[in-house]
Image (cartoon, rainbow, N blue to C red; front, top):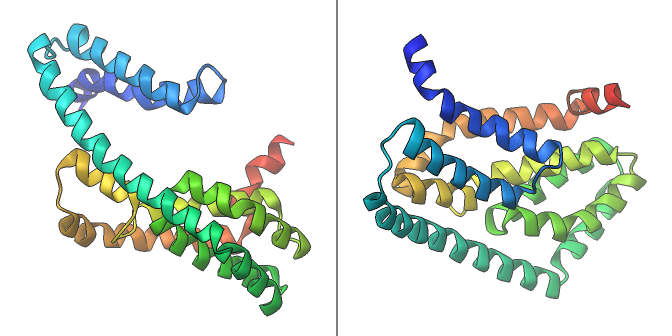
Length: 217
């Protein structure tokens, strides 16, 4: 184990560097991706010595193919999000929710359903831009903490992103790893069940999500 850890230490530094760089404002998430590519090239070439110049054409081709699949899905998701905005579907749904209940827990349950459904068809960032202005005022009126709502929304959309049949993160993973979607769907179900359980715990026990922000304030 010690030998394996020593050999993989260069790769294990990557997530630490990404999170630290974003957290301390050294670079944006997009810039973090570029920095990771540069770091990976340097490590592959000089630390491990496995990366050769002859490998670059194949790497670039695989990158283009993987990116094209994901970008096609994101474009379709954004188009669907524009259609939803045009038809005022999220606003109509939010109005219906307010008319149904003002109970904060039942409201959060309905938010979960909405976010999971929308997140399977609309890319996460677009869904946040689309839904946050609609859900936040409703949450405030019902007494839901906005920090708690933000965490619930991000967790919902992350889960929706890996949920078959149309999760964008699912297609990204399958494209990069070469795993067929039907095999991914079969294997991911137990993990989705755990994620949904965690979602309900975070939703209905706000202290789980708020203890750290409250401690830092």
